[in-house]
Image (cartoon, rainbow, N blue to C red):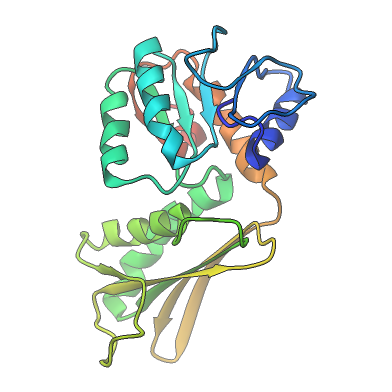
Length: 248
């Protein structure tokens, strides 16, 4: 577990402890914490424990070293950390040529089903003149905005539209009507909101909203564990949660 002493790291460790088909054999974290039932190392280089896969919920600054280590060891990795730079996304693809990498902006089953449903809705509603907006809400401690999930939802819509739509994050300096080919993405930060995402299709005299609410981080942890199980023994390549859902 890479980032084992973080909020999500601890959540996944607890879930794995109750799963008869999963076991955390080692943890990596720069922060010390007593009571972990497995050895914890301050760096990947210091870890001498073999594992079927690495689950990562850490910080984007730690991802480069993680990818290098997994590529060198040929160890599959479930990459859950968000806020990666364009250079890091390129590195993810390069690493996937050497080992199995599963990257998902959101690990929940519900969000990944929503990604599929949005394509169907977009195919019908966009040609009918509906505008598309994405609104996401998260707790005050989340450092990246918009969320990776919000971008994934927008990407799902835009892919259906041939990638022709522009993402707009701020309209405060603009004084003009809303262009047709844009997707507005808004971020709310406050309190202890686990995660809420709305995709709004706004047409003339009617609005259709697709909503997903996570009431507990456990939904992400469960998905990460299932993803790790899926990666065991997989050949090198880039995977996402749709592969886990389909089992192939």
